[in-house]
Image 1 (cartoon, one colour):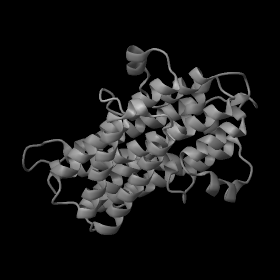
Image 2: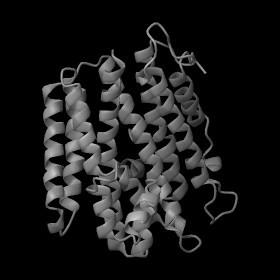
Image 3: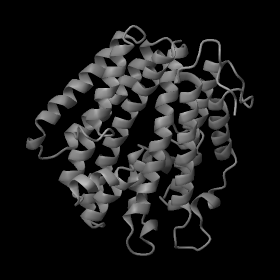
Length: 326
């Protein structure tokens, strides 16, 4: 497959997944705002920080409140991570590989983008963003369904799945990290309402309760990081992303013949053997320590894996050369 095509398919799916997860995070934050347990400015600022966009937001908007943050994350054409920009980029990537994807995929992507473009033009009239947020999540699920149900599960499909799962692992880690940015009084980080909201961000609350019952900080982290069956858990995402990577390369687990295999395989192996107490850092009961640092390290390594995927498959190289294994 041409590197240009693989790149477009990979990023098209990352961008769609990113748009959905931004919508999920906004929805959860709106719910917490109604609870009234966190000061609104701190609440909306935490959302911006968790996605890593605080420098851009503060420079252009200063004060974090619902209206400013919603507009920034949903519609801002200058924010490359806004829902609007993600879907605009996804549509453009889909257009460039139109002959590689199915008609239902193209139709759903195009329909979603046009809907968001229309909503962006009318955003001054938004009273309650929930309907818009729900629409984005439904549209993303339709696109995923069309991808899995109407596209041959060959190399292009595996690039699509790998892109989606790398992005999903990143965003699940950011859902977990948002608690760090809430700040506030000591012990608040163990509030089950807050951790329920984290689970809801990943549509995980129902499956979590079937397995653990009452919501706790440690079990929430355990479920969203280490669970091997839930499709938004970070470990699950990396296992399935690596499966697609190995189909593409023709490699076997543990061979690490390319930079992408080495980086993604090592990160997956880290979660294979991770200890929950090391992740949450429960050396002192009642004082959350360590989780933010662990997530930072995970995100750094996931970014390195993404860079290795780019080096292995998408970077232009002279004919006849291959990417060297690191």
